[in-house]
Length: 266
Image (cartoon, rainbow, N blue to C red; front, side, top):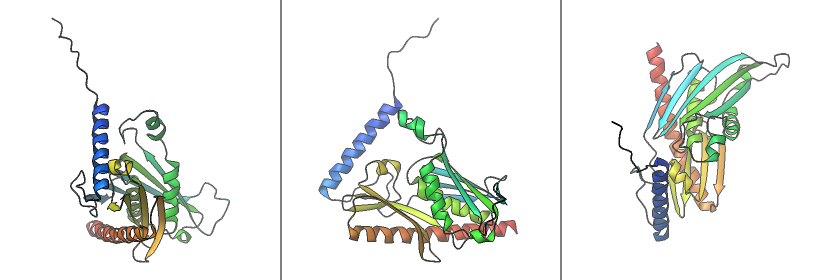
């Protein structure tokens, strides 16, 4: 006896698209009213997502770290210092290589763009990660050698690059790489007159502008600042201060995590 045929169909992608459109219209309505609106995950505008971080998930690496902020999940592995391939070209400072890639299942499949983005190296993020970490790592402490930083985004849920930067900093410290200070990073999104911190991917999709700050709290030094969209001078200042404060608090968490890891090792 054969099973009865069904004529109904179900498309998760279509359902997700409808929810995103509804969310977009809801945001537009709140912006028109210039009022605070409840974020989808229940946070206030200036609340970051609950975070989980740990060191040492990859035993084969010199150092590694895992970070989970909401739906965003990142793992970073550090190898080295090891002899540079261009060993004959002596340098008084070491080399830092950074690579950021996404798994093929990191984000929902969304047309042709997904095939060019997922499962491949993200050159833009790799370059920005290198620029951010270069000012924090004491390159002169490992001349003629190279440190490789490999970041893999397991799931993309928004604010990917800031989380990659913070996780990479933790992995470098776990590897015993000398640094001037830990680097933590936070981003904010602008919606009309409102600024929200640690945006999700849905919020990033409808933002008017974004700002990312990578910060070394102990040195009070910004190693990376990226701005997109239209911002007024006053709003930029408030956004930067908001990010720096969040970076300092996140750095305190990372320091405690490293202390606990060191105590367990001893």
